[in-house]
Length: 579
Image (cartoon, rainbow, N blue to C red; front, side, top):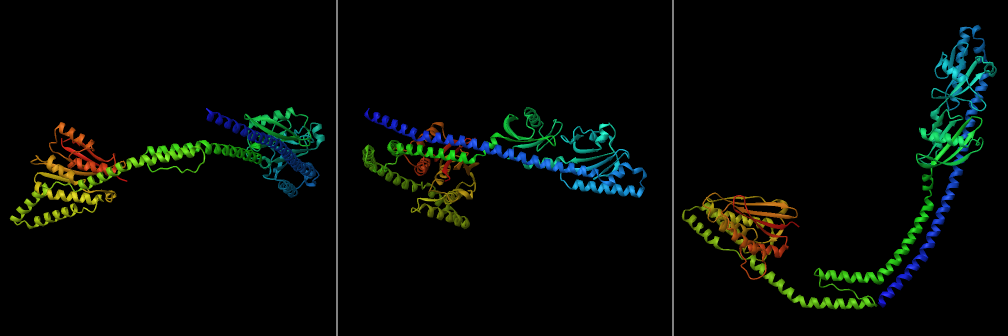
């Protein structure tokens, strides 16, 4: 109970200290973020208004220069002569005058990147001289549209057929009297160049810029967006008082808040807009966000320090003790906990170490005796091989000698020599798999001299990837021997012994099967029970011999699997781990 009270009191104090440290930091960080956002709003607003003001003055100067060039062109001597006295001019003089006017139109067009073409309309001659196409018949629909300039001082632009023009009909008196002008100068404005200027004017990647005519009859934008144009027109009408100075507003475009700065040119009758998504501008305050994350990191560091302190004082020592118990549970009886503390956990660690030491002393002797017994049994089982087939082999060898079959005597003698050499190698407990397979094959070749007419052998090749797997000696030959002595014992002819190798997951399966008469169901079940009962006194020869040795060497996943074949015979599978 007292311990619970102390812990409760400690956690209360730590929690209060945590709040005292963290809350002011977050208040300061939020205040700084708010201040940074306001500063960014102000700076971006000033920057946008400055850009809009700069570019609209730039366009004003450029378009006013184009208008002044047109006014100066009115006083051109050749133009006045061609428009009023063309009927009395000779052909050569007429042609030279047209060439001169064309050259001056080209000079006008080349003087500004915003002029796509420059024209002179001659109504009396029904002709038009252009900088691009030189001299051709006058297009009346275009002439009619360009001469209807409502107010040149306030709106010199004419939008016709998707194209933008600055026109100058001569003279004003003719227009007042509703007469045809003597001639008309026009300059087609390059909307592509204007759009490029607007593109350079943008701030950021998601914003845009737009020029709109006084009545909204035409617009040029850095991107083709009808919805944005409608929003800007609505904004222009709501700020009708903005006729000379810039202004700033926030509108929604495609469901997103946008900052808009715009200005109006009284001399050109155009409004210039620039808009930027609010989220892009506020997202650019990386410096303030960095400060916020730094403060958040400091807060997390403070939390980590407090948590680590609590962890070291209570949870970490307890976790060490629990981890040590788990290691003992897993069978590690040499684990100890270093007694490097001077609190209550030091006493627990000391008692734990004493307990483990005592348990280890109690079971060490039993464990060691069991290990020695298992090792002794393994060595005994390795050398336990039935010698019955040797008697038969020597009997066959004697019979071959009687009939002077020297070639067969040589082969059989070599096989027997290899057999004895392998069996008598008691210094090696394990061998590469390829040697064990070769030994079993030697045994089969010896038995072939005896059962050649009765038993056919199919012996697969061992895959090279498994040749060097280390295994206990004498695990395959006893299985093959069992086939000869039991499986095919009563087979007079057409007996079959098959040995195959197959990879299955992380195991190598060596299958030995025959087509003998098999055994009774009761005998089969009894054999399975023997394989499952590896402890206690029991006969340890043949299949049980091999099965026990594999279990002792590789663990419960290895050993023998018994089954019946489709032909009614017997199949033994040796399961070996690959790794």
